[in-house]
Amino acid sequence: MKPTITFFPVGNGDMTLIKLGDKTTILADINLCSSTDQDGNQIFDATAALRENLETDAHDRPYVDAFLLTHPDQDHCRGLKQHFHLGPMSDYNFDPPEGKELKIVMREIWSSPMIFRRASKNHPLCEDARAFNTEARRRVKVFRECSTLSQGDRILIIGKDENGKTDDLGSILIKVDEVFSKINGTANDVSIRVLAPIPVQEVSEEEERLSKNYSSVILQYTFSVAGQDDACLFLSGGDAGVYIWEKLWDRKRAKTDDLKYDLLLTPHHCSWHALSHDSWSQSKNPAISQDARSALSQGGECAFVVSSSKPIQNDKNDPPCWGAKQEYLSILSSVEGQFFCTGERPNQEAPEPMVFKISAQGPQPPTKQSTSVGGAAVGAGSTREPLHHG
Ligand SMILES: [Zn+2]
Image 1 (cartoon, helix red, strand yellow):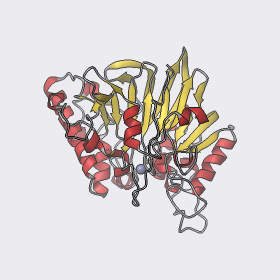
Image 2: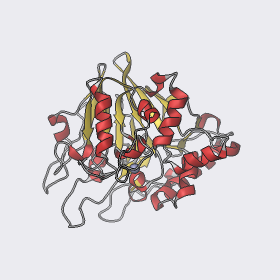
Image 3: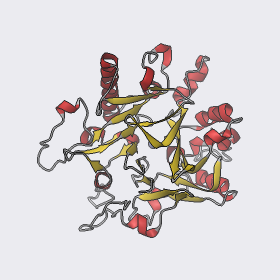
């Protein structure tokens, strides 16, 4: 089957599922909200949609080969404790309470202690983030004790931490600017370049600024399909803010290929703050940071930009922000690209997962058919089928 990248309509939050040709799955962030709104109306059921798209192992346990948490905000890890198995695999509960489903196994997790550190300087971590952090620490401890890891204990640490705290992690440490292609221990037809977290800054004011901005893991995935080595470049940057993108442009202006994309997930749900230091709602003429814009402008021909957010209206809201969308449209106009919003497809009333199939020619945009087979969770009695048909 062809690799796919699926963006789920989870409001202002992220949940991206990458499925490779051999069905290896990478799940980046989750925002598993309730399937009903405040008034009790049925809305998109993200949990059901995610579960339908996961493979199960020989013991019927749903699993992902790798789970990445780009940063520990609630809209990126909501539902972790409730739906994912945490702790050693020997503690897995095969007999969940009535009405509950078997928990999802994370064969490997990708975590960035640096981002946890920067985030926790600013605000207390939510319960799901703390649970993820505890699980990451448990896995690192197993690695330190055994120096090999088996499925369910595996972990990759993204980006070196400060003061040599990660220096002994050898094979499980992926430093910034490195490229890796082993997922859950097996080489695959995707290679992944780590662009951020931006390494620790020697000037403490700069480190302070990085902590104040939204830090996130920023990755550039390169998919190889049918012998085509760079069939699709996918750039995803969590909620990284304007200062991060400026720093990234500083580092990459002479090596722009590292920022190239055929598909971009807009940072921070199409927030103005990825592109500007000014407030969208309060400034009269909010200015664009040209460096941040340049970092986010490396789209190839016919590139796609996706906003994982609520519908984008022409108003003062942020995120998602109308002004940011106009900026992405202007970036896309020079390459004849297209812009999509997860909250708007196929319509705002009943959004559905958005599936990009990747062929040797690049990512293929969601068609009416491919989004509708995902089975909207809206309306009782709707039948669901798996999103992917190989
Ligand atoms: Zn977010």
